[in-house]
Length: 400
Image 1 (cartoon, rainbow, N blue to C red):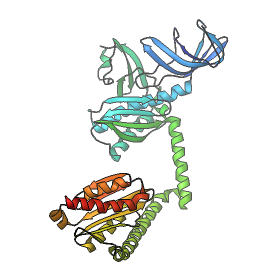
Image 2 (image 1 turned 30 degrees about the vertical axis):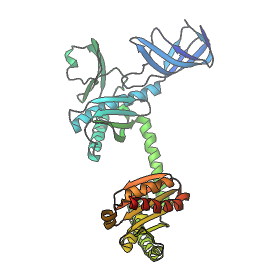
Image 3 (image 1 turned 120 degrees about the vertical axis):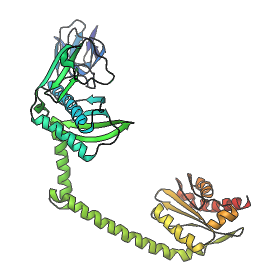
Image 4 (image 1 turned 60 degrees about the vertical axis):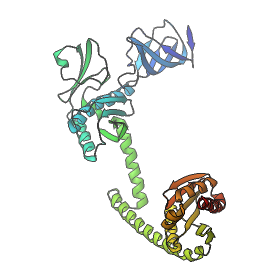
């Protein structure tokens, strides 16, 4: 069986230096060099004990079954992955120290780019807890501790105290990864020789992924360097836009946020003033529906909050009656409805039920309480029809 250049292949070797995907660590990449060709390996997986599949493609010449090959692992990629795998062990111990012994590893992903660590815990980590965990890991890195990996019998005294992966089954022989007196775990993955090879460790996110399970993502080594360089460039850009030094960015943003808040309050006051100016002209559009005053009008509002505020003003001025307001809000429709309390008791009116029918006209939905309801729709062009429908629905409720 012969494979030519460009062809996808799966290769099984009698012996291999490639690490196959397992324990959360991704499989190795690299190449297999034969006399007449070369295979680029882009993934390595185990299908059963001792059988490793090398996935790749023929990048040069031809290869065939029985060829003698030189297997070369991508060393830099392997080293980056090893950094992150050792970091997960340090992280696991740091989490148990900071949060408690109830913390157990629930899963992980160790790649050259980053590490992801899932663990059991009942609440989000506070900023102080995250800083404490990160500091502990970096302290161990700076101590330049030897990472000792060795295989031994499962009943060896040295196995005592080692943390095992939750739900994992182990044979008679196990591999222990020991980082001084700080960490000892059963693990078959690749690791650095000393903790200083990690460079530094930085948590980029912490989140919940299920009940009682949290997830931390982090960087080490050159990936962390690139991350910090990107963040520094962002800070430079923000400093340039704000025309301040980097250490003045936060105070400048706080000042701008305060000024923005003040402007927003001024705008709200002007909007309320403008709305009060509309009230008298809008009240001229009241109609009588079977003895009930109805104001159903199309108005201009900046958002739903402004629409509700205008509705409150009109409701108070109207007294006993029903108010339905519609407004185009960008490419959507906004609707609110108010019913005075006396009509709820005496005539059985319900704002939520009324507006639900009206909202269907603008391809929307909504609802609410008997005295107040709001709704949205996808078709603001039909707001006029919706307000006419409001009169029909009100009459139906009154007849019932």
